[in-house]
Amino acid sequence: MTARSLVTLELNGERREAWVFPHQTLMEVLRDDLGFTEVKYGCGEGLCGTCAVLLNGESVNACLLFAIQADGCAVTTVKGLSEGADLHPLQRSFLDHGASQCGFCTPGMVVTAYEFVREHPRAGREEIRAALAGNLCRCTGYVKILDAVEAYVRSAEADGSP
Image 1 (cartoon, one colour):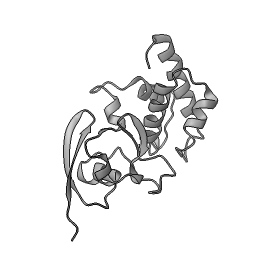
Image 2 (tube, one colour; image 1 turned 60 degrees about the vertical axis):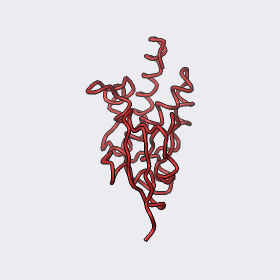
Image 3 (cartoon, helix red, strand yellow; image 1 turned 120 degrees about the horizontal axis):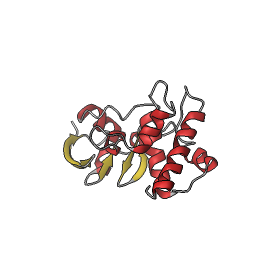
Image 4 (tube, one colour; image 1 turned 180 degrees about the vertical axis):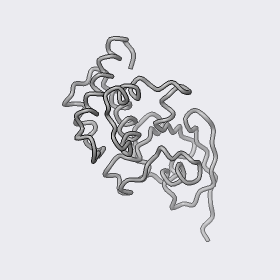
């Protein structure tokens, strides 16, 4: 039997600990051990973006990262973007624009878009499309997703905030 290691994360702003096996992915630990089921399992190969989270502010596919590699890091899921019951403006934009149908890809899409827009606050539609290329959606056809992110960029630009 392989020994487990204690991993400490700052998860959505709160300190969380989990005993993990060396082979466990961050996605498995977030979902199965810590109950953060908004992190979805899609392909398990880093191709779909469904499991995207922010690791120290950078979007990563949690299925490709061993949990032990995240020890001591800040991890933010889509729920961590909101402030209590108040949705983040990007989440609100997804809702307002009907950018999710089944909702399975939405957490990864929002996290990836959030990180991209934070780094590129004046991004245009084609830049947004390119940034989301690693996030697959089988329902929406992407138009409403792009509309939502583009509207968020415009509103953040008007407000002067990312």
